[in-house]
Length: 296
Image 1 (cartoon, helix red, strand yellow):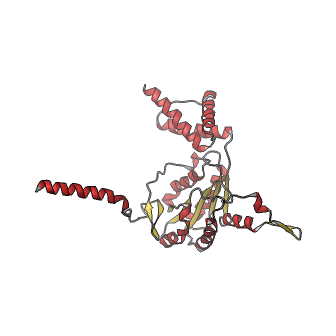
Image 2 (cartoon, helix red, strand yellow):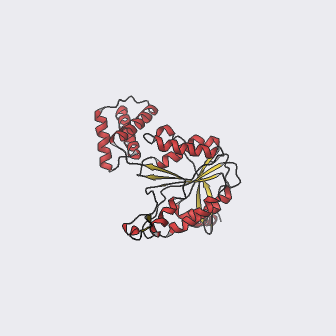
Image 3 (tube, one colour):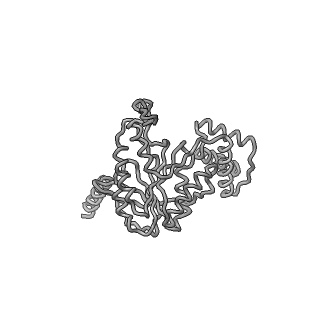
């Protein structure tokens, strides 16, 4: 009898293991007093917010060489948290230059003042009205964050998004803002052919409808912040900062010199990137090697 029961239980475990990936994700009830960030998941015709375990160790002072962008977005976000008028923001420009890091650094600084973050993918932006409905009456201040918001040529989704943004953002409660990052200022690729239908009327240039349609999407954001590729000097400044942070954490003595600068430049060249992400990766690589040699 025991052998039959054991065999049955083993088969039941096997069946449950195969069924588990097909079952809906277990939903955790959100307590925004303890949760600082969540991600929107679509499920069927609806969706739900899943809490995220986020690290709040990024600081605004860790963002080197983007002082103007940092100050503008920090001021806008502080206005928002204080219940004052603030704008939806579009952070656009070169990849790896600190756009997403800036948003997360602001979360780390202002979470104690009631700021909360909800990540939403571009493909789910049509669900904005549902998300807004869920959080409209809560006391916290919510930034809806869409990372890498852009559209490829031929995609018509941006027109749908434009109408959704018109409705959900213009009538959004005062505890909701949308922050988005993109590699493009106008979010949609601009072609030379788009300008062929532009015309002069009474001495004034009137852009074609295609150009107007694409620019109109970006116009939904009241604050535009531009991020540019790093110069060599800027890149070295960021490398020095992160080596200093990591070395201090590991109690490692180090000193910046010309040889270290050359190594950092070679690393960036091999990666084809000279940006903040690359600087951080080089710093981790170099500090790790020093610590390994120290152990040996």
